[in-house]
Length: 304
Image: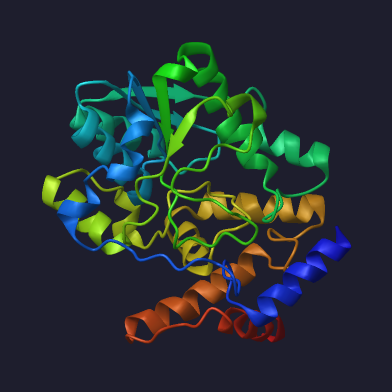
């Protein structure tokens, strides 16, 4: 593990997160009509399929994928499946349900069998930002359990909101890459948002009148768990300002376990909030915050 972390740091000193000198360049689709089409080279993945299931968080990326599925395969069984790990922001599940009702697709809610904080205490710390066991155990695990129990592999395509412009340090995901879980290897996977720009995705959803999550208007950047160790500064600031009680509980757990929220980079929740304040101030002035400046802000926050 120590060697792996050293290799990652060496990589990030040379490249931006998610990039390598051999990483293929993605030409993101900006045209709205083209963004909603099924590429000819991918059409075979949907031949004979009766079910299109979308792993649905309620965020813009997965909402685009659900809308894409409904537009292209509305004559088939389209399902939005939402996993509630018990630490979702208030109203997240309801929003996912409302989007599914708006698009007239099925909604499925699944939950893990364990509690996130009990599991953290058992494992001795917060989920890793490199190998996030929370995703496999509390999000994809329950979703895969439901798919395996209810949908035949030869009749089903699984989708999510994965995009090529997300930070993926060790990922080799493509538009058609499968799940890393062995028991899901017989299922076909497709990622409609992978090469569609974020701007085009938002425009398409707005033109269609699809409901957006309320948190975006209040400063949130993601529809992620409120205790996510990988949250960025502005997300932490959003939680502090809108849900101070939840923010205090994160601090309580940091103190109880004796470990900061993001252990790898030694960032506490308060440090992330400070970063968020500075990022928000720069954004208000129309200034861009470079990714590498994040570490300088951390150092400044530690000094103050």
